[in-house]
Image (cartoon, rainbow, N blue to C red; front, side, top):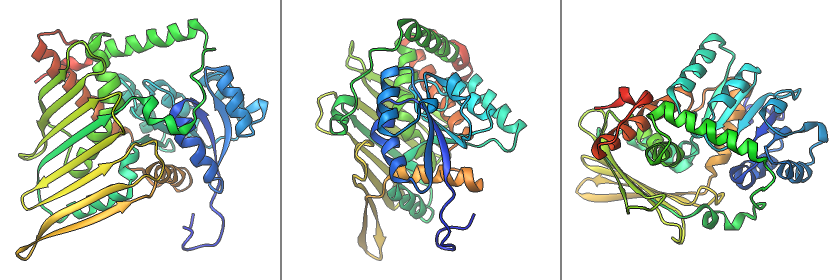
Length: 387
């Protein structure tokens, strides 16, 4: 399909099924899809909460036949081109079901909690070249990140990547969004079943469903995975994990520190702090080179069009040169436009199966290192990630 620069024809419209109507759907994806109505239409919605389906269905003018109470019903919808998986937890089974239905699939992070799920997705993609998958690492689409990665190509090998995240409570981050109240009408038996499946997947991954497993699934795969994607964009996937620490004791979520190695002699360090009463989300990434630095400062991901700041510092002759760039381009919107391109032209996204699986491996290495440090047993898939 020709780009808008080459043709005055309207863009092809992609009809979406949306699984999960919680915070990220209400604050980000649904408003952006409404704004991108020339490229997308919402063809069907599903959530385990009947009240959420009713309110969101009315808000976005969905007919009764396009409203469903879960994935099984959603998969019966006709005329759908792509599936957006916006639920919490592991997305492996939903991704597999969507691909099996013949739909292109966009999945919010993480791709899955286990290598078994990732490998099942890989088999499906290998068996059918028409299958298409995009993983929701929206920071890769931030114009400031794109510019920083382009600049990095001329700066030589990375010496170190250092990340700091200050993470307030979700309530504080989303106070502006006027979300619907958390639903109370999901059947207790359904909640019990979801929890049991989550425990099963955590146990398969790291041999436990306790705090070690929650660190793995909820913090590393649930949040720090975005930083792993940035580290990979500027350097490589981690080649080893040297240190994992959490503090203070008896607090959940805790602060988390992770240090490890990258390709060559490069190192990385992540410090992730859950600070429920901190004023605002803040994330800083510093990429250190022999004679330059690239620094990025991100706002809350839920503040659409909030500025991301980029600074590149290097020598110019005998003088210091600072290049500063402030981006208000919306990363989530660029990500959705990339999914539109995947569906309509087959253009590959910046993150998919390979990246999602690599981050499961790194997350299991982090869990294994932490278990070794604490003298805890490590089982499941993570057994192979020790060392």
